[in-house]
Length: 139
Image (cartoon, rainbow, N blue to C red; front, top):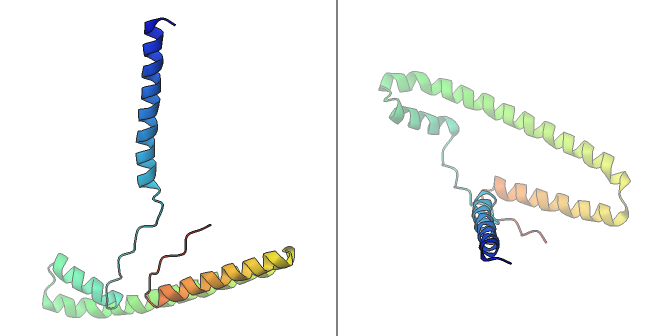
């Protein structure tokens, strides 16, 4: 092998190594192994948080605050109703899905599906009670 081709091969291998390292760094940042922790939600109702932020950011006058506050409270009530309705519809959809899938599974698969559902229920309960305990790692 002549020295030029040998040096070219070494250069190509080095470039490949560097490209792999760069891709690994970007991949690790884009897809972290553990999920980023959630910041705790601010306390207070949605309308209170928005009014506080708007009062500061928009430099609202006291008379504007008095006029805007009932609008925000009404909107909060409406959004809460939409959220509850959406949650109810999603729960019904998932329940129908499980009812259709369950007969297609064998006994062991049904047991595993039941365990998965219980795990999801626990995570939902933990979230609704404000405990952001990380989920167990997948195995």
